[in-house]
Image 1 (cartoon, rainbow, N blue to C red):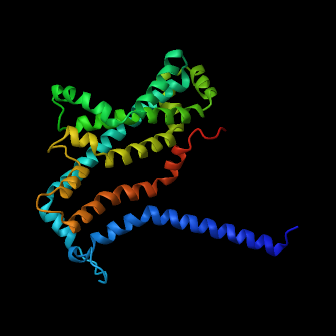
Image 2: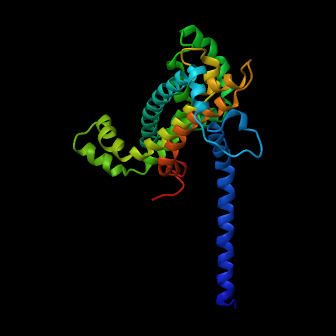
Image 3: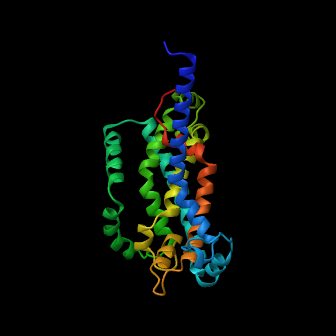
Length: 281
């Protein structure tokens, strides 16, 4: 039989192993972010220098404001597109999730697999055929086309998440509301929506993170008026005058921090969305 000292040592080693594993994961995840933010506040001549002490400065952000005004317009466009796509995707996903949760048929069952299959396709597969359609409708380089595309791309996953949340709402509540004369629309608005708010927040987080950082759709369907922040960052990297690393790191920091802070504040809802349906009860 192991002694108390041996058990204590074994427990200490396990705790130490977990601490080392967590430290490695944090270093892998947060290390690059820390380097980018540090470089953003470092004079450009010292970013890649060795043996130079860190001297914080805002000169990179001043240069960004002076020479890359398009970046701030891109941030505004990113905010507009992200907000619009989030509202549209959450609304469509909640309505679809309610339908899949409360009604059953062969068509609905088959469409679930169709949605999942379409979601697994690379975005470029559906993007290129859409270009002539978008061009014919005159939607190129508009906020509307990005809002619709981002929302449509995430509706399938959002529908599955919302169906899982709505499945957990007892059907007896629907039946009680029907006994009181409520219509399906009233049941959805007064019973389902309040009780599935947590799922709606989880879907919103997924869409916000995706839309804020998306590049491919914005690259293909926008040129100037609706150009988002990731596109401006790519222009900085491909500048004919050479890459201004300090300005690039400053822009990356400004584009990264809002979504990073948002995810940290909403991490509880994000985890609940990721684990939705993993357990019952």
